[in-house]
Image (tube, rainbow, N blue to C red; front, side, top):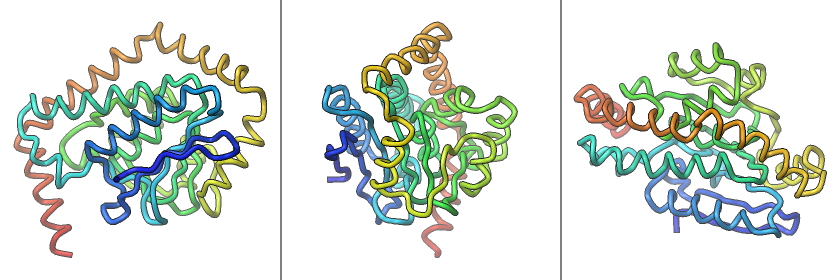
Length: 254
């Protein structure tokens, strides 16, 4: 199985992508697993949901290009992008605190998953980047829309348009990363829960609902799906397929 779901005694529900050999890239099985974790997190015995990756190298390297590069047309791309867009919307509006435990590199769609979470705890030196622009597409899972909700607009636009890689410490300075730690492990997440989220679960949920109501008014879901559609058009273009071919060839030559 490409993922692991476990409820810890502290009340944390852990969702871990277990594809370390693929730098924890997302495939359809991982998507389904994340939705299962979101559904499980609705239970009263869960205080918060933690999303992380296996090993020490990668949190998530985004969509698995070896799988998704086969999607050539707008229809094929939309099927995948909209599926994950819906899942990340569900993650964002889960009425429980959500934590991205960034144990290593988070690039492309990996950054989108992290952005869908309420809090981001990153290992010191972890590399993060919305690199989609270098593949001639935009963020396609709704993560760009969510980024503008998380940090100030000039910072969000810069991160997206530069399509560069940053260190966790740099992103801590602009508020994208909430905490930089020596080791991004379950113990750190439990400590964060104990220290920062110590009030009653019902109270935490009520505060989260304030944010969710704001998002309903501002039509977050509609805006995320518009982002998905815009990426779909770019995905089907030759420029994107050529950029991915170049990327995969470069990777295979190493």
